[in-house]
Amino acid sequence: MVLKTTDRVAMTDFPIPAYELAEVKKYFLGSIQYSSGCPYQCEFCDIPGLYGRNPRLKSPQQIVAELDKLLECGVTGSVYFVDDNFIGNRKAALDLLPHLVEWQKRTGYVMRLACEATLNIAKRPEILEKMRDAFFVTIFCGIETPDPEALKAMQKDHNMMVPILEGIHTINSFGMEVVSGIIMGLDTDKPETGEALLAFVDESRIPLLTINLLQALPKTPLWDRLEREGRLINDDDSRDSNVDFRLPYDQVVSSWRKCMEVAYEPEKLYARYQYQCDYTYANRIKVPVTPEQKSWANIKRGLIMLRNIFWKIGVLGDYRRVFWKFALGRLRHGDIEGLIASTMIGHHLIMFARDASVGQQNASNYSIRLREASVPAE
Image 1 (cartoon, rainbow, N blue to C red):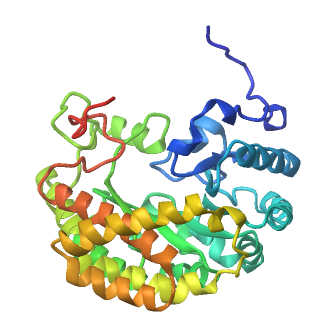
Image 2 (cartoon, rainbow, N blue to C red):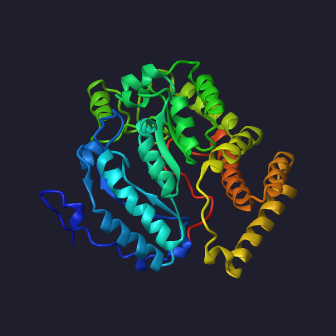
């Protein structure tokens, strides 16, 4: 049976999710939703078409109750606010944040928080300051491209409300690492776009960037425009995108593979993580060590992770010299957590990028084309 409604259900009427039905220990992080919808109309994005431009909201009391339930069900470590845009309603975000700060104080800062937000959050230091106090540590920003002409064409002018690099630096100064979405294959792309993107990666010092080929989604202005122009390709499952690019398809894919290869070279990636450790992470508030962190089970888990990292990367890895230079620096600073997090995520990125550079990964996370799983499903 499928339940359908004529009007969207008010989020204040949403029940607390049944987190107890999930095997939470198998999840990397917990998830929670405060709002739905986004006021902006970026050409490629389906959020306004699906969920509206006027964000619907839960109450701060609902969010606190959901966080309590997550904690009760065993979720510790990190919780991701899956809102389409955490500052889609800036006043609401400011109303919520003091409640998150109080919840963190009450529970002993057991959760690191993360969210998605538009880059113009850098213009609101009063929001960033409260997010820092609430122990937000990561913000995903859809930067999409450093090219102002391209941002204007995709109706994402709000990314230019502050210079992009300055905005990233501002967010970092409040202790929050930026994760960035990047799109290649835009109508404004040129043969030299790949090189410009790699220069941006170096300058921004963002460790993790999700670089994708443009994919037209239904219920977006992009889909409608390309359909009018006869540039939607829906009958070729050999492609990683359904867009007929202005540049030759093979050239765009080749540029994407080159960007993946170079952006995630171990030396470059570890240099960006070193910056985050030295600058961004150092700007975070100092929180008490929780009883769970001091537990033997957690210490044992950390030791096992360190053993695996040292063996698989530090001994067997082909970039072990780069690894040990970074790892020894973290050990000297007593930063075991930074060492584990950076090297685990970094290893995944390096391996993924190597596969991508030789055509063994999709060039778009939104592509309908599926590849055989490298590990059989259980």
